[in-house]
Image (cartoon, rainbow, N blue to C red; front, side):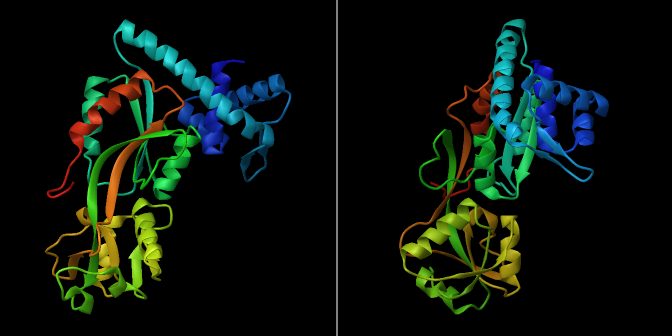
Length: 301
């Protein structure tokens, strides 16, 4: 079994298309198809169901996928070890992030990393599924590292390093009666229409838990994946929100921003990676730089 065959198999798995996999690998499609067929012959089972409209993993392909990722990761670790001795890191670091993450300067971080390690590629992808999607990508081995918001204990198999914590604030349309005071109680918002992130986002989980713990009901009527747009919907009178303070300007004339009474509700940013797979040299180098590029807002814990 050749590593190249596993690399081609993984590319087709992630693209679910032989043409796109070939383009990504910079080879001809016939080469990808031949490598996958050779792997199927060696293993004695079809790995993909191929039709004119789609490509899907078979049960055998599903079984091979985590083993292929682990094998390629081990091979990359071996290359890293030699590369460190030979003078220079190589490889690729696959990074996942949320769709909006103002608390860290990602372009600055990756620019510095590229300058320090020009032979290491960065593959950055944003998850429209929020932290839940990023965690799944880490567990499945699709990502090496991800910037996440995980309230509470991290899932088994992951290490999460805390980077910043900011309060959640109530955001109300201008003139909303609950905004007349210096703070807002959750009970004042019970039964309101809410603008919020979809299920799976860290801030949504914190607010859902807070309302459930207080025995209060709320109705999320509009879900937005870009948290910085939440205040735009509130400004139009379409609902209220409880959101991280960094995502809305406190002096926005179209909304009222108030702290939540009765104990702090907090949103946390962390960097997560596998605790069961040894991080390669390139990932270790990236992790060492991250803290320098965190933007901690004034007043954050």
